[in-house]
Length: 624
Image (cartoon, rainbow, N blue to C red):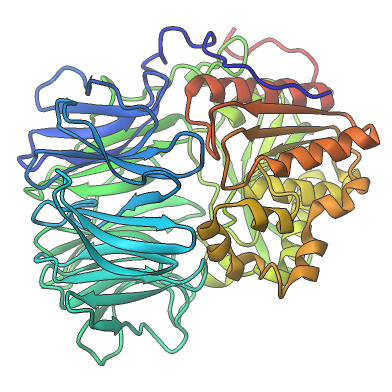
């Protein structure tokens, strides 16, 4: 059976209740009096502003929907918004005044995709020009764009190129170049002189970095000559080796943010299987100090306020969706800015009936296991309140460079409320566990990642967690691919499956995805011509006759990252063979479900599907 999901606008008629929304992307105004951020509390992600002394945040009108990030210009005159483009998995940069006036497109027209750089000013130069990477086909341009559209300066052009930062006078630009898993940094002067940067004899992959205000030094997150990424510095003029400024044996660096004056670096560390630690490094003295107790277990998007007295960040944990917080660096006091109280959560996103109360949510447990070849794996186990063994869902994240962390997930909590355990696995290829683990599924090693899914099932059954007759596999994006691969490679381990925008055939994926996505994926998956035989062997569609588990296929109609043809060929093959399946297609959505009503409908459908096929008995809600 197949069906197409309609508009779903009736499911959430009055917006999202305040206690279930998510908020992210904090950006302070230059005078520190206000903080802009993105929130989906109205049902679509939009820009909101919190002012000092305001009782609650207020939306910026007129509404600009499908906003992904927001950033205040250094002069306070503009808000730059990264927005999901309609009809495709691309992004655009829009500008508006803080009161919502003068709304206009700055970059990403037609078939191009545009992204904002990072740096101290979050996508702006110190003098107020936008730092934009605009890509068409496989070619990219690094641009300085005046917000009124009066001037656009091309800093560099090239294939697989991303603008990361510029110096204070914009006479030097820091670029990232290369495919996934093999990226390097390059500095380009205004006269076109190029300065390739060397981080070590074994360069690894450099994902992010920033320039000192004078443009003489690059600070970067580097795993060159090491397994756990650290903070390093390299002098642009060189030659010279990279200097390690901060490293920790118990975790790796996940992000860095340089203060506007270049004196302090905010460092976010990934420790303890996915929790966060934040430190501040004074570059003059070399002293690193720990930011005290974080408001939630996982933080991201750290920003120093203009006076450097406070740290803005996004924080979340297993019982609280993403929210914007401010930490006073003297007292350590944490204040929520995107909600009117402490914990926002009172219910899941309507996915289970009746709703799940916060006190009934399940705290995930970090589990350790071994793959068939002995590699150490982990995952987060979400458990129902009754005694095991339970019907169990093995969930596989996307990327594959993403990571399961102890954050709020309405799908997981709703499945638990319905009587199922969820094991959110970090199989090989996941980030957060070092360079070797991240690369352990590249190209021909991907077969081992497929076997990791079976190892997870064997661990759950052998430890008494899972009922071996009632195990399902589910994943999104790359996790959707891995779900399909596991279902055809180990078909009799699973009683059901859910494939969410997963790749079925690498050949058709490369043929139909965005050109820049295909070019960047070669180092990770393999070359579509040179490695055609390997990619065919890794593609589930060519072994779809082995798939016997009932399968729910979910996709966004406008997905051009993993195009909808990937779902359609799976559905057609299952229909031809008479395998039970359903097809849930979301019109107007791309690779991510951005509208809250659609996310609610997806979670509801997944819970119903898995409840039926894992034969979960009807039960009273824990909240009743």
